Amino acid sequence: MPEGESLEEASRLLQRANQDHFRAPLAYVPDCDGDRGNLVIWDPIKTCSVILPAQIVFLLSALAEIGYAFMSGQMTHETSNAVIVNDCTSHRLDEMLSVFPIRIFRVETGEANIINKARMLEHQGWRIRIMGEGSNGGNITRPSNTRDPLSSVISFLKLLYFRSQSQSIYDYLLAQQPEPENQGSRLQPTLMDYLSLIPGYITTSAFEIRSILTVHSSDQIALKQRFETLFVEAWVKIKSRLKKKYGIVNYREQNFEGVEQRTGFGPAFRTGDHSGGLKIEWLDASGQCVGWIFFRKSKTENLVRTLVEMKNGREEDEIEMREWLQSLVGQADSQ
Image 1 (cartoon, rainbow, N blue to C red):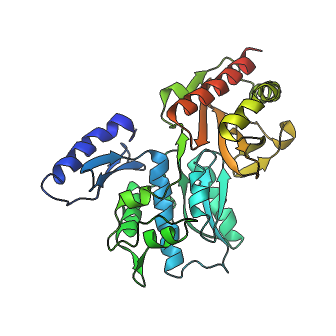
Image 2: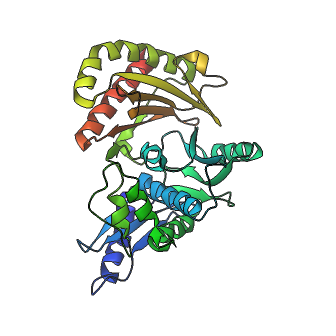
Image 3: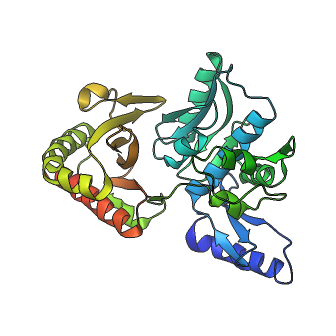
């Protein structure tokens, strides 16, 4: 997996490449069959390499492709524009792409689901520039139908070098900030400049071994129904604490099955084998999503992956929320 320690060698090589003076902005590491890859970037201010999480690699790739399409006139407010991602792609993406005329569609994890959704939407007249599983870091840039880490590299080069009427994608994003910082235009923005614009979130890595639970139940219908019962009981007990600590006042459930996302609580919003992911989105007083909890059982093994995200959260918040989610899933499995 191109995650964690698998990226450390590339980090050291990038460090060596920039020892004397700044030469290389990034390095990339593909997986064994070359369909996914993550990137390591160079921080010219601190003169060190920075390993990017998979979610950030996809986010920056999407910013590059959507920003390039919009600023070059290929995407307009008059066209129906879409990005397709998997169920546990970070909501950083929604926040950052909100300055473009784009709609984000989420589908069940699986590259085939993303491709199938793209074909359906394109048949309906939607224009799709980029899609992929943000939780895995891989992206598919149209007209391609497969993931290729070199696509991410090309996207990152657009962040660095594309300009429209002397304005870079960074300049455009900076101008859209509600209170632009005194950073000013960059003759040559760095990838670290783009990182500085990304809102703060803490998200469980899809490769975090502690996010995986072993369960006994193979009945996914019953497992989800028991989880929902336990969740409602737990919500009554913790909602005041969630409001005080995170500003969470409500929730909504999302169910993912193949190319479909259904908003609603309970089995009425699931069909078929119920084997897709279940997500609870945390909502603030304005109804905005400020985090989520998610679980999905493997279709081949008695394993459940649990992921959480918290806006403006810290590492301890992610651990606390993930362990709370795992306790509910564990109780649902034991009943």
